[in-house]
Amino acid sequence: MPRVSIEGLDKVFDVNEAEILYDSLYDRGHELPHGCLAGSCGACRIEILSGSENLQPAGVIEKNTLEAIREEYSQKNGPDSIKGKEIRLSCRAKVLGDVKIKPFK
Ligand code: FES
Image 1 (cartoon, rainbow, N blue to C red):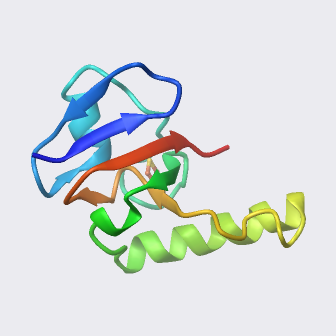
Image 2 (image 1 turned 180 degrees about the horizontal axis):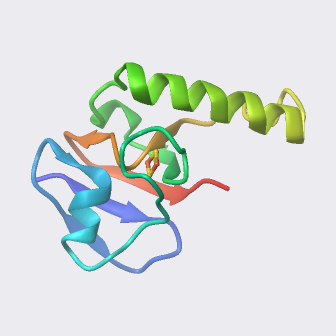
């Protein structure tokens, strides 16, 4: 059973394999920041601190939104600011194994 941990939170969530990350935490009493829950607004963006290989690869909708987020973030904070950061959308990413995350602002 995959385990999800959140930076700064002293709790680990056991979730079902292939569950959507946002839903899996919501169902267990933890609500992440969110908006549309459909992959287009980007409000649910998270940074993957470890275990990015344990998330199902992003589909087209998520990829497009992530591209817009990366572009906006580098314009605001400089081109190197987002290098090396693994960003995903919690409302789209499916959990296949252990991951550690934090909301990405
Ligand atoms: S909540 Fe809008 S993209 Fe995830």
